[in-house]
Image (cartoon, rainbow, N blue to C red; front, side, top):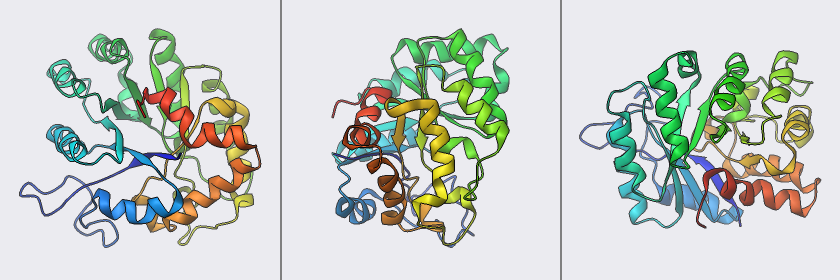
Length: 277
């Protein structure tokens, strides 16, 4: 079993359009639906995916409606702003669907940790046993421990290795220090995703040795129980084919043994998102 925990589906031909990607984006601005993804993922052994939403509130419903007729979608990370007055109502509305497994926020939201309304709404998320995905850069990593210390029951998933540059060498020392700190908290997980994107190369290198100095830091910080697979498809296509994205991490985790590979490719995702697969 393989669960890809980070994909995006969207349709620019909808009457309301899409908030992302930009129409000028010649790679991504096209209709991207489950069947398009499955043509690439099924041959690689992927058995299901967790989808990420756009920033439009009603796109949460659009993805959930899509998932109602697509069993390949095993979970959904929504997009709701905890600073909105309607946050709790919208969360109650979408979380009534068992496929809704949490929300994703950008790093800028963590600047609101002093805001009692923001923190109260994240507490509501935790009370519902839902997960908080964080799309953050290395600088924002230092704020994550404050959040989880305030809300110890909250599960957090760091997206795309917190944006560190990947260049084949040992990664940035400040990022390493911050990763080691967040790794001390057992309720924080990390997606080993975005590797090809963070090289900045088109195409990205396909040799696992190029990525190992970075992934080694994650392995040492999170161990075999809190690292998760995510492709970031179709964004990843700008830098590498889907099969290459998966092969890079497959090669790495195969060296760690069968148990570690199984945990990385699906078991840890079940724990982080409380998936029912």
